[in-house]
Image 1 (cartoon, rainbow, N blue to C red):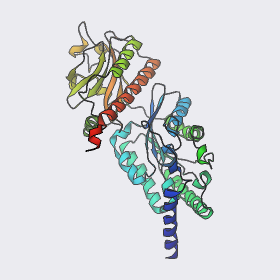
Image 2 (image 1 turned 30 degrees about the horizontal axis):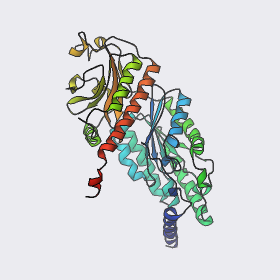
Image 3 (image 1 turned 90 degrees about the horizontal axis):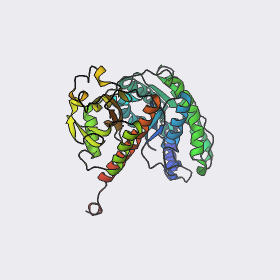
Image 4 (image 1 turned 180 degrees about the vertical axis):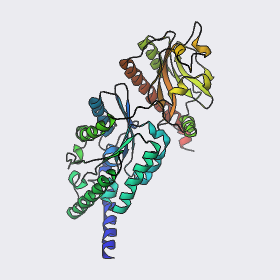
Length: 408
């Protein structure tokens, strides 16, 4: 009874300290840009960074300067491939919050998941038994939705080494952190798809020290562990898609049937010119149609989804390329593969909504067969990321209430 009372008092003190202390990271700014980071290259590895604490990237205003950006660049340096790191992080994210994220079939597109969960449970003295159950449940849930993907649990850093804490509280947090890390390591050892990454970060006892230089140093040991698993990744041609959720994400974007956008048209024209192709386009895939949002060198309009190559692209694990449509059994009998204005070559890269669902593609087409080298793939991906960023901004603009609506 005395132990339970002591534990309850400690939790109450911890919650009050976390919410009010000037030493808490919550006083720092956080990124305001889209929650993703990219490193150039082809044959892209997709990584999900999920959790709280360092995954939030306190102290910087862009994920490119935080943990995600440095992790993406370091992974690319180690693997020689492109890397995309998507971020699902929040100060109060718990294992219970993460479960529905990992359960979605859409997350089978990831080659690795990096979890920084546990910091909240450490400073608030969460139950060790509950933590053990949570780690096991996270691993098993993700194994069902993405059986070929590795999950990496970054050790909970000793908060008392990173910010100033009351001495007794700091000692108690340190002991509990070590206990939770031991549990995580034990549970990860039970599963071949899971790995525990011991994490002893460079100390940042002054909040002003938390910035891009520290995130770079913190990302390096994490990247080395993840890269080792990525080298043995299983290459996939397709990923499962939750069509209802995908269509809901497209509708929520609010960009279907929107007016032409000059900036988007410029990127599409650049794509056509850079590849010396006969055409390029941004195509959105609705339930039964492909709507051409922007095009250069080809007609602007709508076609049946059954005739769309981009509908295959949104289900592809990475880029989708057809070097000669007449040699491909899925397309050689299509009307558009023949005649003076034939599509003989296609390369497309999927475009995603902010929640990760594929909504369309940036593609380039040509009236002659051609090869598509690794440098071409990297360039098309880079252009697709520019298109995706613009669509997200366009969505934000369309979703923003007018001044009159704000005061209703």
